[in-house]
Length: 152
Image 1 (spheres, one colour):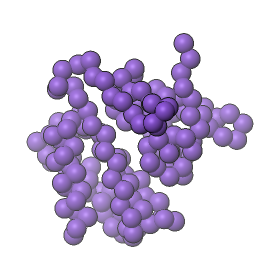
Image 2: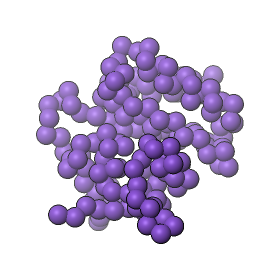
Image 3: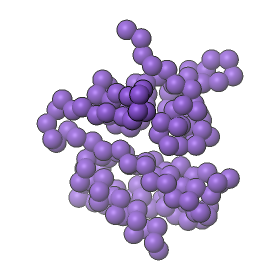
Image 4: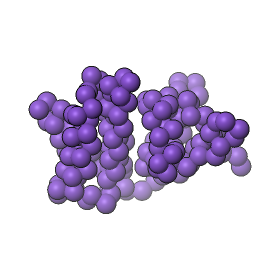
């Protein structure tokens, strides 16, 4: 059975990221990809691993372009992936948030080992993306933290 393969651009579009952010994830080793000629190809399983959705539970609807999530485990196994797009962020603020958010995760009553936070900054667009994967309650608490920190 073959697995879907994405280009960097397709992968970025699906996750609402800039293609340069995806390339940085590949170079940093946070995302596995195969180099074919001068471009990369990313397996669907890598998207599932990055978003925290178990393999086989994430289906892309080609008709609507939307994603469907089906869970096989109990409610405690539900995971949420949130991508916060923050425009017009300067590099100093981006650095501050990149340091504070992972620290805030460790200080919460949440299970930090079950939550993932990635911060990606695009200086050309002055745009910061915060990618949070965790339980619905932990993710909601972290989203409130992101909002509070962004208002400072």
